[in-house]
Image (cartoon, rainbow, N blue to C red):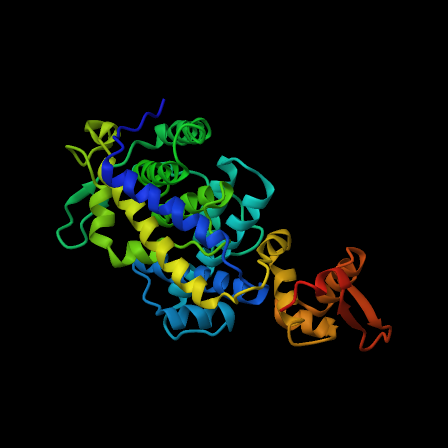
Length: 361
């Protein structure tokens, strides 16, 4: 059974207290739907940029934004485009998983990896674990930096990790559980590639499920990227580079300290950003947005400045085919999200249902 070795130090305790204090203050900030949606989108784009940058992606933040939001092609950057699209879609799936269940599922982890490696394509099958040995080498000297566990042990080690997460949620602060899950997944290294990104997504998923996502604004990837030496130093612990010769039983307190310090730092930045963006006196409407899927949130923002909606608008906003956009409008009418305001078949128009209008700015 997986039993991580660590001691809760005064430094960890200080970071945990800061995290809890910042979490409560951010939750109670008055943020309107459009502002919250904008901040969430910014957080996802930043996470995508910095998490892929750690793995060597060359796209700038602006190029990431253009690739994802405008579907713009960047010359000679096909692989980089695929990576950022995959990570961005995986972050959206993290949100959806967190809404559907309150536990970590091995199939979900495999799906997140498949999305990361497959460029976010729909219908991908969950990734199978590696079938051979993986060796991590120093790109400059070619020396072995880390020798992960053998392929035959990967499945049981992942199962042990998931079992530990399930049991530890009630015994340890959620940030510590997320930190250890990140560390152990990266240590197991269950795939030939994409392990770091999937480890960060797993930690993010834990934060989302157990309500440390800060309304979807949470992103620790920028902190990792800006403190990359600390990131790798925290992960590379133990007397040997070989998993079986000490790495599996190494004390990971240093890593947890790094992780928690980064969380406190990131939470404080989010607080300042959200505080500037919030409008004093308006009721916080994030609870409503948590009940809506990504497409409905986009449409809610559209109604901030428009009275009527057409299937053509849905087609452009949600990047759908004409038939799919019409079918989606019909579904939303059935769900009482929108109402038909013009019955014309050629140019049918819709309005936001009255029960949602009160949530507009």
